[in-house]
Image (cartoon, rainbow, N blue to C red; front, top):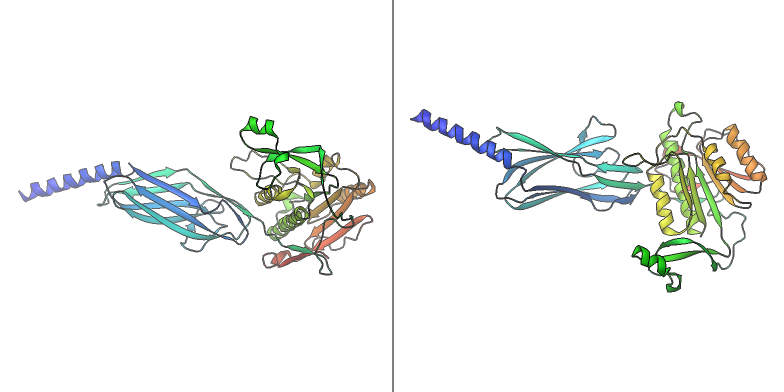
Length: 389
């Protein structure tokens, strides 16, 4: 009789285990999110995971394993090593009763510029006896863009650097209503007179016209993403970050002074599907929204390119006009780039050359080209300002 009872108990336990395992993921929802999708270097955000058990059957244990970027600092929780490059594994144990929602929050530190993905997530569960274990994969990715550092840019004398240079500053700037340069979405503060009602009706949202100013200052910023002349020589990560930080700071300064800014680079902007162009070209624009587009491109840049910056500059040369300003940021100066910059200067283009790092210490100032240097790539994280010398 005792043997029969034991057998029945075992069969019941196995049956319950199989049923529990089969129903574990029924009515179970998992989601994860960030408090913001974009952040500046050094900011703190909150990453949260949420489990909802929408059924009567409780979940005694759920192991949630999420792939997280290794370049993002977790101030709570200890992600373990992962076989994927620049990835770690964040593991969390949940236990949910019937119709219960559980949320776990992790403060994170954005300590590196970049474009990051949280996920995919593997969820493991089973019965209370440990006889059955099942798993499922959640492929929903959470994306994070960390903008590069932006610092004040100053000259060797300690004065604030201005992209205007020797350009004469006007006491006022007014819009030429007969010269429409394009359209954009309406933002609070725009004049009602500038609304393009036909375009607004066609797109079902308010569209405003943009006008060229009677005095319109333009600056084209070129960034060389390569830290060595030949890609096979490798990548100097600190020098790369110094160059990107310099570009972000110069663009921010130009936009804040009312310049129309065009940004070009030989770098590819990374995307989830890697379907972007091999080089970066952001046309002229102004304002905070345009600055955000450039900063996001800088955040998502691939760390090296097989295309020389000189090729990008030659392609853009036809769009540049006499007296237009070029700011070229590069870690090194090749002979071909030197000749191209001299040629553009002879054609009347206002050129500023900013050399980052200490690779070309023997470069002398060129005629008609304002030349600056920024050193200290080893401590770019600790810099309080960018000093042009």
